[in-house]
Amino acid sequence: MENSVELSTLEQWFEAYESATSSARTEAERARDYVDGNQLSEEEISALKKRGQPPVKYNRIRRKVEWLKGLEVKQRTDPKAFPRSPQHQEGAEAATDAIRYVCDNQDWDYTRSEVYDNFLVEGYGAAEVVHKQNRKGEVEVVINQYPWDRLFYDPHSRKSDFSDARYKGAVIWMDEADFLAEYPDRKELVQGLYADQGLGTSDTHDDRPKRAWVDATRKRIRVVLMWYRQGEVWHWCKFVSGEKLGSGESPYTDEGGESVCPLIMQAAYVGRDNERYGIVRDMFDPQDEINKRRSKALHGINSRQTMGVKGAVDSVSDMKRELANFDGHIEVNIEAFEDAARVGIKPFELMPTNDQISAQMGMFEDAKNEIDLLGANAALAGETGESQSGRAVLARQQGGMIELASLSDKLHRFTREIYRHIWMRIKQFWTEEKWVRVTDEEYGARFVGLNRPVTLEEQLGQAAPDEAQAIAMHLQLYPGDPRLQQPVAIENNVEELDVDILIEEVPDRVTLEGEIFEALMKYGPTLPPAVLIEADPVLPAKKKEKLLEALQSAQPSPQEQAEVEKTQSEVAENMANAQRLQIEAQTPRFA
View 1 (cartoon, rainbow, N blue to C red):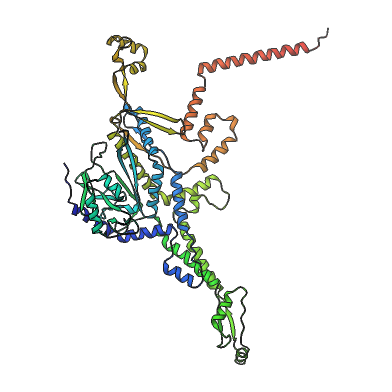
View 2 (cartoon, one colour):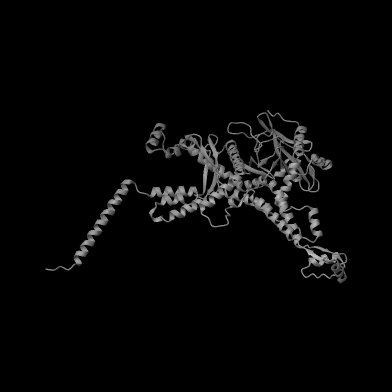
């Protein structure tokens, strides 16, 4: 039975999150701005324009983030289900196909990349694995991704996967028409929200740019979906300012029947005050220095320091403008030069500033080097600057990969949890016969039946002829017997399958394997084909397995091999005798 929490408490929890995470969310918004190239304040842009200098930015952060996102794309792998007992060996393949079907149907690869983008920049991301009924009445497993600025969580949570959070959820902005289609009896509530214009405590979750529970201009309403834990049971509640829209216990359970929350969240890093942040935080200062040092150096190159006696030039400001022009011309007063010569001083001179410009450029290069060493470094990217062996490149890449191991491990854990929840939803809601279309690079498109009833006729057809005949005689079956069409078993019954979901994500090894393959190719004709197939770094593992099986099946048995060798020996002997007889016939005979 539901043990619901009062709406006032839920609203307090939501406001507690907004209050406790204010500075962290401001920093997250700054991180996104820096990735987007918004790295200069209005005051800085105004100062640059005032001195006639363009607001130039060298966005090194975007390159870092894009490189890491590209690495994630390159390391994508498919889930694999392994049986926990021998009796589920065949069913594990069906479980694998079912999970891959959901991933393909929901475009999971793209969703994971979107979550990883938030994970790297703002510091955390999330996806929700739920179910819905389509128009045909079939239950589909759905993966929803929420942008980071639509998420909230228990600010007392300390773990990077939010497993210790008492509550978490998402903010959903809905058009008024969609809201009333889902809640047709809440028209008065909407009008009340427009009139009240209840303001939130921050603008992070706002429907840009207005900070409120409703947007009267666009006719949009902010709805909060909160998942919270009471003891060991998860509950949900949808609400707007001052009123619940719906609530209840979580409809989702794990393999053991325990209540679970379908919203899976993951953070990159967790600070001392439980704030979540990504890799961009460490790039703020180097990026600022890159922009400012470059701007300072550019300003210094276009500027000149001068020294002279009073009256050496008619106007100092005009003289400065002429110095800024490539074809500038400065006129000096001869009287000032004569007066200066009498006392032995220089009346006018340009002061050298090369040392200042060199210092600025040196610190500019230091800042670039610092940001280049963060995250995706040259070694990991394989940019060695010179021709090196594949083994040397791999060694450098493995050294660079250590820095990313923590991020990769968290993404791996998040992905595995998504796959696990997909399998939970399948086991819980796919109770009827279902056919899934699976596409892979090995077999193309194929169909897999889940919860498929097996008739007595099919079962007898799969049995050995003697065994099938014995069963038919025992049951006194006759041709056309209606009992033959009765289901006697369920094939790939997902509710009974007991599997582990595993994934493998490893650094790219093509460099070293390619070098080994090239070395083996030198001995190509003398090596068995199986060795070359195993060493090929380009062939996928499934394709290798298929080729090796075909190669093995094509090889003759020992008895057949012996007969082939005997035949080859006989043929060789016959050819030798024929050649000998031909030579004897052509050889002259002397009496």
